[in-house]
Image (cartoon, rainbow, N blue to C red; front, top):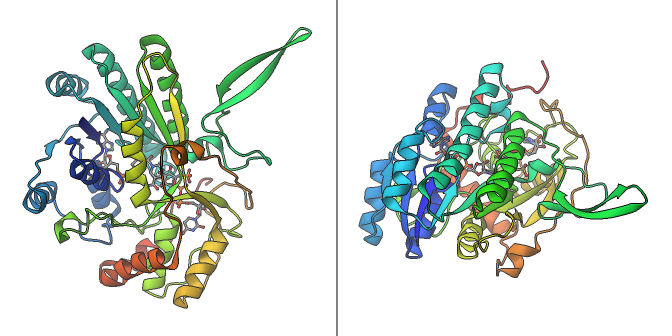
Length: 386
Ligand code: NAD
Ligand code: USQ
């Protein structure tokens, strides 16, 4: 297949590009390198030294003989270039990662809220609008988030995207299937709930074939492809805005920095290892909706954990202390979370769950690059309420 990966320079995008290329697909990257520019703005780089795009692609060619094309464009602004690219390349599928993805970054200031809304909604809308204008039948695989549901399941196993409901009309109940009620906890998560409405509209109105993947917190760094050459290494965020919780804890353990549990650590979240992220995307591409089917929505998660339990595991593994700090976010202090994920399991996903070996691997990477860590960037600075 020919696949365009929007956001293919990012943490999830880059290993996905390599995985799809290795599997024999023709892969094209579109990225405006905005994430690298945010590194400059935040004065904090990836813990791992990521290579420039040219070196990444040259290394892949040297190691595998495979060519990956790269287009530097802003999907949220360069509508005509997106359209022309689709018409020229005629891809079978698009994978859409090209959004500002950090909840804390989206809550830093009015400017960052506006940027996140403008960037994410226009990027998603431009892609959908351009597919319709191109007249091509391109399957869109979008990376959404578990955060669209909120994190309280009220004892219900969170279904995959849709909820079967009965609507009382007069004396009768009418059966209906609706999108699960959105309950976002940040401006970033709000953009993902609005993406879902764009998908519903373009699917209804224009028959676009769309798969929306509600992914949990991703952890890990390497995949079998990113370890083939130092220049292929994936990014590793550890700062208070972009670092996600488990990778942050493993990096903190590497420098013996007490683990930054926010609040009681009673928050339960869904997790997935980066090696499963790339497999899920391959499975989604290989199993597109039929023409006329509603949007496919999958929960891209393999397990759930409470934050304080993760801290305990990392602490026992490495000896680092745990230091709960005031929670900068506005979120429930404690929640239960039970999530359905049977669709990916039925397509053949064999989940990579949290094991000591995998935790140690990430810890070792953090150990290897710990001298690149800027300790001043570890504590969170973005607050939900001022
Ligand atoms: P990332 O920031 O590392 O990667 C996003 C990439 O998109 C970057 O390379 C960035 O430069 C590019 N980009 C952003 N806006 C763009 C635009 N307007 N035009 C072109 N390129 C643009 O983020 P990630 O961790 O790889 O996440 C990718 C997607 O997966 C996001 O949509 C995110 O919401 C979703 N997701 C991530 C996680 C996670 O834990 N990392 C979990 C669930 C869902
Ligand atoms: N947390 C801590 N200590 C830390 C960092 C985080 O206790 O040092 C807590 C947070 O308060 C939160 C939980 O850990 O309760 C998860 O935080 P996170 O930063 O790891 O993840 P989150 O902000 O939810 O965002 C990440 C990705 C986002 C994706 C989301 C999936 O950045 O792109 O959409 O995970 S989900 O969480 O399932 O919505």
